[in-house]
Amino acid sequence: MSESSKKDKLSEDKKVIRCIVCPTGCEITAENVDGEVKIIGFGCKRGEEYAKEELFEPKRIVTATMRVEDGFLPIIPVRTEKPIPKESVFEIINELSSIKVKAPIKVGDILVENIHNLEVNVIASRDMPIKT
Ligand code: SF4
Image (cartoon, rainbow, N blue to C red; front, side, top):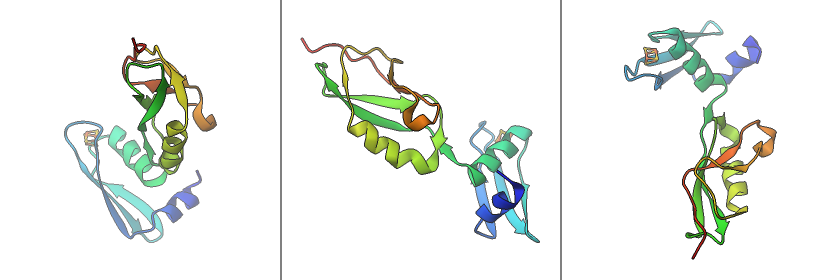
């Protein structure tokens, strides 16, 4: 993303972000100053990178459930292996709710490969044995 489009995306004059990368929890502030985004308050480089991503390209791990055929339970909790763009989260949850997977399933099994071409797999969050 270019610097100018990054600046455009900070719609408010000031935004405060709590860094969650380590337990210190620095309060990071982004401000529009003369058309430039200034980021202050981070205690280290990792926090600065986290703040930039949160401001300009926020991502989230998606947790959801999928329906199971022949499973001990009718649904299984699942999650994305990596964070995905925040704007895709609801679309992905909706899609996962419409897919049925077949038991048995082991925790960590890939249930959907490369969902929406995001280069992220959806994996099982628990074992799901066959219904007996
Ligand atoms: S900015 Fe650095 S030191 Fe502060 S919470 Fe984030 S990771 Fe920890």
